[in-house]
Each structure stands twice: as structure tokens, then as C-alpha cells.
Length: 160
Image 1: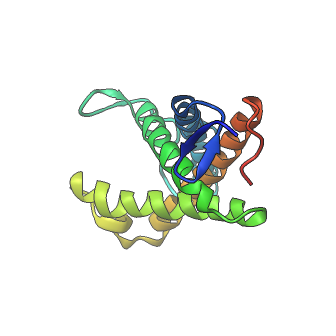
Image 2: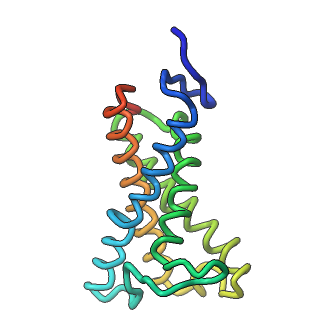
């Protein structure tokens, strides 16, 4: 079978296209999964954070939601590269949620927050910790679903 290899993932689709699909899946998971979870948590009073914020953020002045979606796309590529190591079946979906919840939250808490001069781990506030885990877990499930859909559309079958 001829094809390309991305880590342990063999595919007939060129790597640039696969990486592009992964970026798109992670990017789109922000407005369609991450932000709705944030809205739900706001509606039930867990957080005061507002979804779909469009005010510009430094250093480029792009709307916050676009910045979040861009980084979601970058994480989508990381997701693609580590997902071949996920278990199959229901374990795949559980691992996708855990990857989003833990990987994204840990980096946000212990790398991004200190760089921005913010307290680590949401200032140890339980609601902030729960919010990060839940919105990032929603991103993980959304990225998995969108990546699976994209693979089916391009004829690569499934990844679970």
C-alpha cells in the first residue's frame, strides 16, 4: 500500500492536507464545542466568563475568539499526532475528552498564565479549574468528531 506516514498514522492523503484538516477540526471545535460549553457554564452560574468575545487582544489585535480558534487549530495538529496512540472504541472518545481537558488546561495554567502575569491554575479557584477542564474537554470531543468527519469525507475511513 502506497501512502504517507505521519508518525504511526498511514494515510493516502498528502500530509499537508491531513495537517490542514486537523488544524480546521481544532479551529472549528472552538466556536462549535468550546464556546457553547462556556455559555452553558455561564448560564448555570459556574463562571462569569462570556463566550464569543470579539475584543482585540495583543499583540496582533485580532478578536479573542479568532485567537482562541487559531490556537485550537494548532492543538488540533497536536491532537492528530498523538491520537494514533489513543485506545479504540469508546476509549478513543474518553481519551479525546481527557486529552483536551488535561493537555490544554495544564498548558494554559502553567505556561500561558505565568507568561501573561496571571495566577497559575486559575488562582486555585475550583470554579475556574472546573471551567477550564470542561471547556477544554468539550474542545477535545469536538476535535475528535470533526477530525473523524473530515477523514470520512476525504475517504480515509475512521480513526476509532
